[in-house]
Image 1 (cartoon, helix red, strand yellow):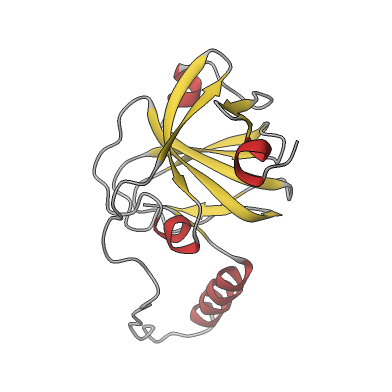
Image 2 (image 1 turned 45 degrees about the horizontal axis):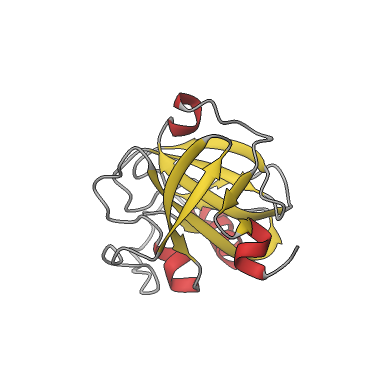
Length: 172
């Protein structure tokens, strides 16, 4: 499963990488006890519409749900995904640690407009960082779903409750 790497984690990761690049020694093995160790149970779902396309998405909204994301899952159906509701507008960054299924991620602004779409490769621990710093949601799907369904940047995502902002933040 994937999870959003917060600024602090990016700084820690950058410092670890910088430290390793200046040493000829093997780095000592470290266990990060904050990382999830198993798949989370299926989360509450919501229907999303991306133009004429319908997708059922699990909703990752708490810190633990977002951190765990789709880690350790071994399959994803064609019209299923996971929407990550981020606590702040930010330059989102996702990675694929402990994720065994190739995914695509759409970075989405507060208005529910897809800003960019990226492929995510299984077990790749390099963060895929959004080019934009106005990301409020991320939607992960089976890799290539957006292309197969002719959905690209500029597409607006809605729910049965209205816009993403109305659905998750009560904002019109």
